Length: 55
Image 1: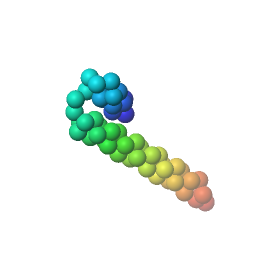
Image 2: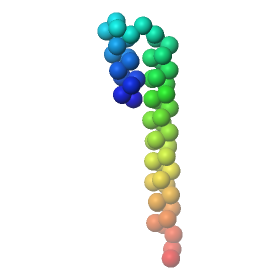
Image 3: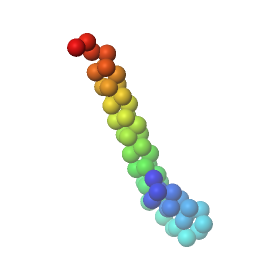
Image 4: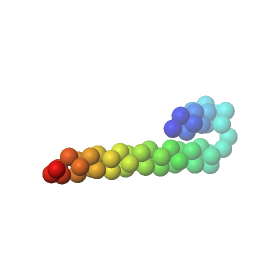
């Protein structure tokens, strides 16, 4: 995400010259964030399921 932000700022300031790489970095960042959120949700669901089990 940091790399994506840096590349976007560089492109906006005129020092970056490759929109293609900026868009790829932004998409990678988005996919990584979405995967992290999904893993967190699965962890919470597993915890809730374990807590509802009777011992």
